[in-house]
Length: 163
Ligand code: HEM
Image 1 (cartoon, rainbow, N blue to C red):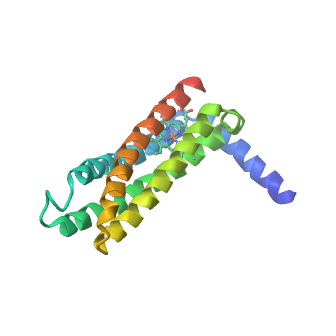
Image 2 (image 1 turned 180 degrees about the horizontal axis):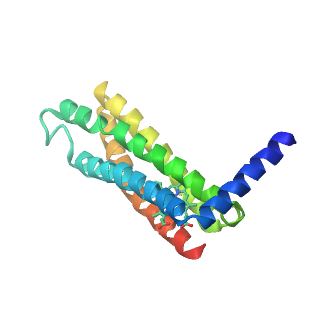
Image 3 (image 1 turned 30 degrees about the vertical axis):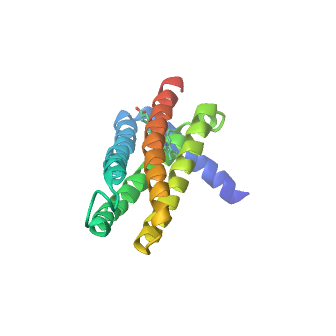
C-alpha cells in the first residue's frame, strides 16, 4: 500500500515536471525519435538487404548473413531507447494512454514486431545449420518486419495527433 502510494506520487510528479518543462518534453520526444531513426533505420536497411539474399544470388551467403546479423545489436539498442523514452511518455499522461485504443493497437503491433524479430533470429540460426526450407520464412519475416516498422510509425503519428 505504502509502495503504491509512493509510485503514484512519483508518477504524478513526473507528469507535472514533463508538462511544465518544455526542455524535458522535447528531450524525451527527441530520444524516442532517435531510437526509431537508429533502430528502425538499420532494421529497414537490413530487411531490404535480406530480401536480396539467397544461395542462388550470393555465393558467400553465410558471410552476408553474418554481416546482417551483426546489425541486430544496434537494432536492439535503438529499441531499448524507444521503450525507455516511450515509458516516460506514457507516464507523463498515464490516464490518457491507458484508455486509448490507438495506444494499445500500437503496443500490439510492437509486440508483433518483437515476436517477428525472434522468429527471424531462429530462421537465421536454422539457415546456418543447413535448413534450406527456412529461406521462405526468412523472406517472409523480413517483409513482415518492413510492414510492421511502418505501421508502428503510423500509429505513433496518429497517437501524437489524437492525444
Ligand atoms: C517500434 C517502436 C515505436 C515506434 C516506431 C514509435 C513511433 C512513435 C512516433 C512516430 C510518435 C510520435 C512522436 C511525436 O510525439 O512527435 C510516437 C509517440 C508516442 N510513443 Fe512511440 N513508437 C514506438 C514504440 C513505443 C513504445 C514501446 C511506447 C511505450 C512504452 C511508445 C509510446 C509512445 C507515446 C506515449 C507517444 C505519444 C507522445 C505524444 O503525446 O505525442 N512508443 N511513437
